[in-house]
Image (tube, rainbow, N blue to C red; front, side, top):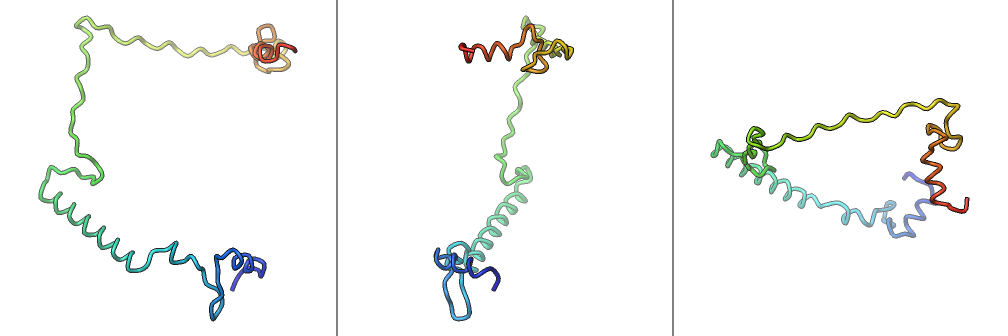
Length: 131
């Protein structure tokens, strides 16, 4: 038996273990684990289900290869014809990259922002008008 006497006592007191003739037993074992018969039934049912699907797929060569798929063969809608008076989608503007602020001009509280126009200081002032 492994574990300290303290832990064995805790497990017995909590009702997880019980005394048996040659030591201790987990009271919840059969509640937490399926029986061998149940495992065998589930395996047999799974095997039969997979064999039925495979047989159906062999009979129907156009069958979906993935048993979990829905077999939908919808085609995509046609693309709009921009030559018939429709406007092409607008191009996205390039991302603005902020220009770095020299260290001497940076806000002392919010590094990286210009001290003359610090958004962090404005937000702090809005949040606490008494300051």
